[in-house]
Length: 218
Ligand SMILES: [Zn+2]
Image 1 (tube, rainbow, N blue to C red):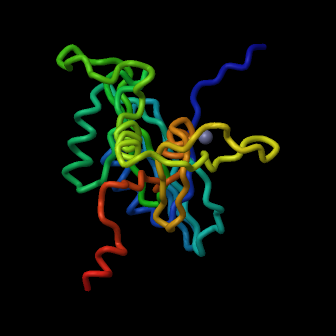
Image 2 (cartoon, rainbow, N blue to C red):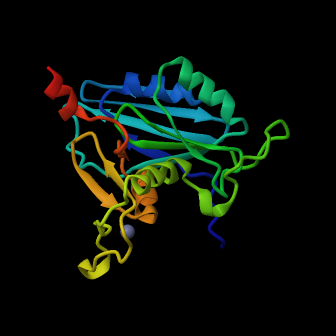
């Protein structure tokens, strides 16, 4: 007998179920069912046949920080971007990669999980994007690398280690950081990987004066 799968449900534990429900409503999901007890709460968020189950416990589960990622494809990316923008949610445009010719946007949910929003095909009203080329997937990364190169480049090797602890053979082209203050010089390939899978990672721009400059003035 063939194994017929009807659907698959993405499940994530969240700290604050009300905050998370509000966020996923912005993405177009509506509450399908929910339950609440003294020590746990859950809500199934649905749009069409797509389901996300949000769960929370009291006290909260000790959940190790994981690179959880939801990728949600939309018929009209602009509509969801407008809703997120109106709610003041920070977004990063990641260009028009081959799997999302209509555009792609990265956001973090209230727990810091990465949520990527994409539109598979360019719509008729959209002008061809300048970065449809496979080689220009992450235009922001390219821009950052150009700034680094314009300032004399870097002598750093990529700090990512592969299997067996062998260092990545590429030269670093950009510096990434996260909200915990960690940073690393990495090649563009690894930078792309990190930006997609690490919540709250961002490009540490070399062009801006940093916090040290601010502190020095005060
Ligand atoms: Zn590398």
